[in-house]
Image (cartoon, rainbow, N blue to C red; front, side, top):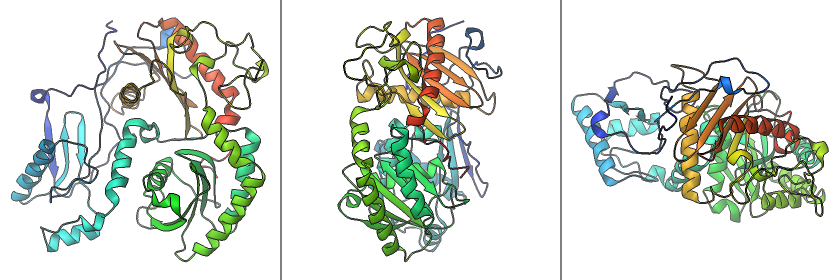
Length: 461
């Protein structure tokens, strides 16, 4: 068994790539994960309360993903590729068009480029093949660039789940109560967020909001500085909710990082939503929710260095803000088997825990040695490959997988209730890594009231 599989982001050699171009009217049905996963050797054992060493197999996956928006006028909004790539795409499109066909997608190895046009833009091109779509997309380059950038750093993009800002349970409940009041007054969705993390969200009866739509909403707001300077009311299409219609989003920043989104189907609801926002803001200020949000943002969430030996809230070492100690206390339950400055126990560097029932995830804060943007991006790419391999419909779904290379030891465990992705020091002991993952899962369950939005899954309101 070879444990030295390289998981770097080196491209597939050109001579080994099989390029497939599909044209015509055939429709494409991409996988729900959005990534083309490679075949890996992994376990299909039934889920259990604890992961065992015998359940874990080694695997390898070399798929990667990226994004680009492109038109036949050779303009690339949010361009993140070399001109050589753009020229190649232009040549492929022109070659197929000369044969009387159109490109639906291009597949090279495990990579796939989708070609998508709205009906209205397509009609413009039918009337005038030289039509310049740039004016129609004015200002969207910033939004596209931000969205493409999120594929490299935001786990929500490949997990199809959202994350919550860590908050004390009573504080989150207080925020949810006032949001529910306005939802009962004709608002379709009310969402309170801090950066890309959810503080609270509620929806009208039988209304559901997919995590992918929440990713688009957060990107839409955070990629434009204009939202920060004044309240706004904008039409927006959420494809998971209804790809054929617009909702109207009222957006207002309550402070530098915290903002409120109120969604409605009515195009003339601006003043009603403004009144709702005033009521919400008044209650949030009086109940100190906004100050608690700012404190949580500054202090962070879960740290691998704080993983307890006995992860129980009764141990007393956790403060009201996760990942920090109460002043003047030091509990023996705190782990002591990690060397200072190099992660947590057994060489644990980072983890992501996804609750399948809630469609939410929590990830540990980055610390040494994964403290640079380059190292963090490389880790997320490794997670993406692992996710694609675990969810490969051709050979899975898999339950467990263990990988070792020169950068990490990666361990993934999937049950009916959760998914766990963990990164360890490349020299980490396998048995200790498994034991540590079991402790991480117990720790998350013990503090779930503070890190998850319970009772408000977007699919079960």
